[in-house]
Length: 290
Length: 300
Image 1 (tube, chains in turn blue, red):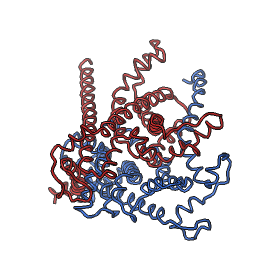
Image 2 (cartoon, chains in turn yellow, green; image 1 turned 120 degrees about the vertical axis):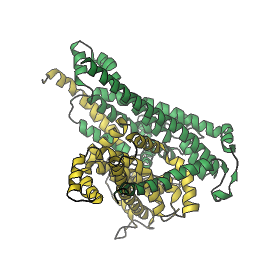
Image 3 (tube, chains in turn orange, brown; image 1 turned 60 degrees about the vertical axis):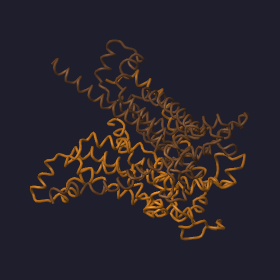
Image 4 (cartoon, helix red, strand yellow; image 1 turned 180 degrees about the vertical axis):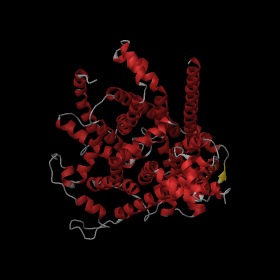
């Protein structure tokens, strides 16, 4: 039943929506604009919103990876480029590892009924609440003195995998529970072993769950600072670590810093635009189902 | 083969969780009884029993950071709940553009906390920051956003509210849209005003989700570190030094690993209490709704 009165009163809410979008995206847009400006433009007191965008800051940041030598760069600091490569390696391999291992664990927990779901969700919650700051001291000690993997990318990948596993297991479980067991039984009747059932029947059916889990894991591994800072050395620094390090220098180069920040923000922004629905599902599931 | 299959599927996850999560936590509990610095192996550190915990009792900086954390978490969660739930109640109608708003609203939570801190540090900057530029062009004095203790605390709160209000908005909107339409319809037919609908129907029905949301946000607010590290690094003085930041500084700057481990334990216990509370609440809620369902069946 369309009611013109309510349609008219709804009209009043559009300015509010526009305002909220502006407030939410404004700081990010400001960062993007700053990253496209020369430092002269950033610091001059008469800077306006009109300026000629330039990619120079990005060239300075990525100079170690470019195939040409940007004319305006006197000394190329390869640190940012290397950090970007490190970040990609760490985030991608820990996401892949977490998904494969988490998937198998979730499947066996659902189908072979080790514990009730309560036990799993309680441990997940408990693990979810352990802050990286709490892991800092023991992980630093163990990685350095016992495992001897401090300063390697492998060490960082290991801790990220462990940190993300509980959540991934928990969210995939809620997807696997929904698969009708008859499908698997039919495959088994046709002579498929447990591994073929898992890879050919179960995995394709939980693709949406896998996507949500992948985004969440990648995001945490890509964004994390504290543990990466403690476990990396000069050559294995990730992007968040280099950003914080360059903040402590005197005379912050805002243009380059904002370009680096933007590079770090781009993958999560892309995920948001392409998979907003999965992200919201993951988020609400985490809260509403406990 | 058949009997061992489940264990085979479970083994890698169990191994990684054991080695890289449970072992470190156990290690930390042990380390909190040691006088340990980063250049020593753990075996060389001296056993001091409860010494580290006793030290914490008399440590003003630690007490201050606990107090800052509690103040920060409670203010932030209160503001975000009021804003987030309020906006959800306002915008719970058929509006075009809501999906755009929801997508944009996720952005602040998705990008790295380090980058969030960076953006706000830039905006709060005394000379190049946009806030002080606007103030100046309007003829006002600049505000020391990050260099005066009270302002710094407020600035940290503002950036957290910007980042996390959307979380509460999205959750409460989801809760609102899953409410039974019949209850609201009945209230409207009985002549309940919009306010009465909100106060007596919508909010009580949303309560379970809201309570879980508050607890989830509280847990996260107790863990906040990176945004504050970039914005103020705990300063000026100790005005914004939350517990997680204090732990990381104790470990890396003052090189007191034993004490840092003891602090970590205190934080962990605090968070564990919150989590247990949340779990108990959801269990109780489930039981209650089950009972109600059965009672209704019997009536029929």
